[in-house]
Length: 248
Image (cartoon, rainbow, N blue to C red; front, side, top):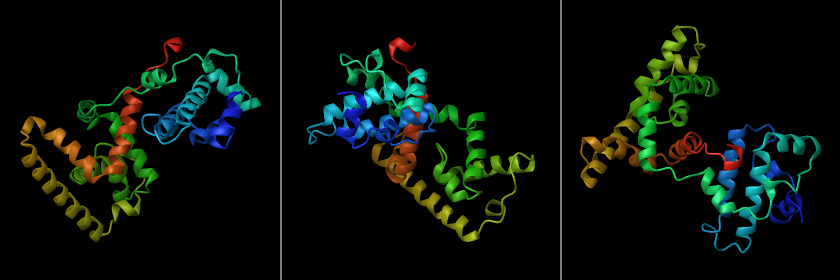
């Protein structure tokens, strides 16, 4: 059987984008993220209870391999067909090795290094300006969605956004400029709670000042699982840009 037939039998759809859980308009990074998330669910090591896990994992590798090559993706988008004879989907490829080449493990130190270079950077500023627009100026949503940010970062984030408003780079949205005092108070209580948790964690782990940043990351992993997952996803995009050897 061909790739499209395998997708239909294993995933209930012959639409490559639907198999990865991403829309047709997805960017290369979004397709990559869809492959990563979907393949984790069926990886043989993570889904030993699924007798078809290996076949699903291999098929997902082929799907991503097709959509990651611009020429092949264009042919599929226009005609709905896949070149089964191409090296991209050949049966002899080690799909587990291919996956590990694309997604080497992100370590805690990678995250710490990323935070140190990201905070205060032009990239962070542009991300915050985008979040301000996407979240319509709601600070709760902005802080929850921003990378490497917790309640303690609010004064710094607010300063960046206010400077952009004053400079004409952002509109003055009422949700930001006239925020309800109770929302501010709730965030302050959350910041106080997380600060206390961080201090307690440092005591439990006997951490010194050199390891403070690591403790913050660990604390965020426990108390802000969704944001930490977002950080991991972004780290993977930044540190896992390796391409298969043929495409270099």
